[in-house]
Amino acid sequence: SAGRHHGRWIDCLDGPESVQADIDSMLASSPTAKETGIPAEEWAVHDHEFEGVTISEHCTDIEKLCALAEAIEEHGETFAAFWDYRFSYGSSDVAEAVEAFEDAYQGTFPSLQDWAEDYAENSGLLDGMPQHIRSYFDFERFSRDCEINGDIWSHDVSDGVAVFHN
Image (cartoon, rainbow, N blue to C red):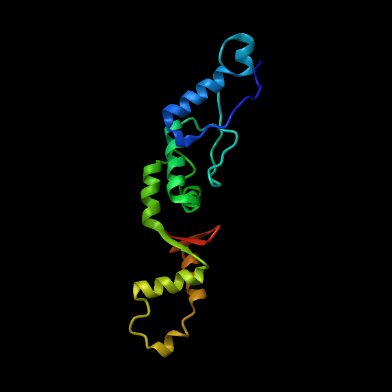
């Protein structure tokens, strides 16, 4: 009867055709199908392991789910954080998100201060400043100001802080 839940884990890394076949198989083996001989028609995403990415239970775009799973598999939790922050709502294109991620991702650092020191060194921010004065530069404050001003945003990940340019 209606309203009974039935499900199984489906690996989105297997590709859209395999995922659709797994969904069809799950619907065909539902309690309702066993009672009536008619496969269930509706399915939803009720649980997921997408590195913390928010997935709507009403997401029925299998190709998008598979592309998202592949992007997370390739880029890890930093991409998952990026997706959730910038692309999780609406009809976002995963390929567009991957491209934006690759442009924005600055790396993972032990702290924002470490990012600021790396940025200053690699961008030439302190070039021309005498060495004895460089030690007075406040990297912690600089990184905090960059985040407050919206130049960057960060997300805590398992091995530090992932930093992204806006």
